[in-house]
Length: 184
Image (tube, rainbow, N blue to C red):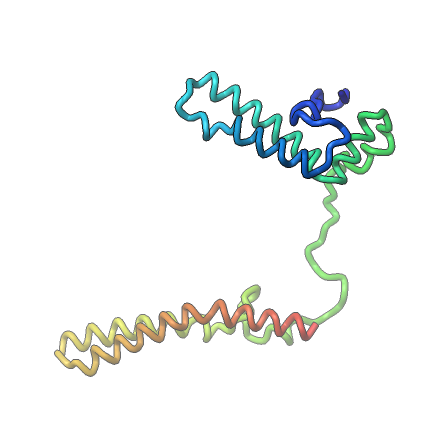
């Protein structure tokens, strides 16, 4: 057992150190079905808590042994090769030098044109569905007031076109971003 985490992951899953990944996975799934707290809802609180703790232990073991890189590092730590295996898994201190801008001097303003920043959709294309919806509602109200079916149908057409505009704007944004990526 390793001194750094207090858990023998192989014992937690009930497998040997030489077990293949497929066997480890089978044991994990069997134990998960057996100890998952959702399968023990009708039991008392202490039994449910015990199953939750056991499931956490099983999940932790699977996280280590299910990943070949982590398993190799875990095995190295178990053998005592601490220096070689733990150095790459230790968390590094926070790095506050990150700057969310590209290093190159590309002028993106020419590519964006009159688009709202971040969306790639021009303002008129964003406002058109809203204006169509509002205009459609206004024309329907006017058609009801003057009792003209032509205005009612024109208002419904405006609302439908506005809804189609709302549905089409994400498609346009994706298409523009893809063409923008191709230009770069």
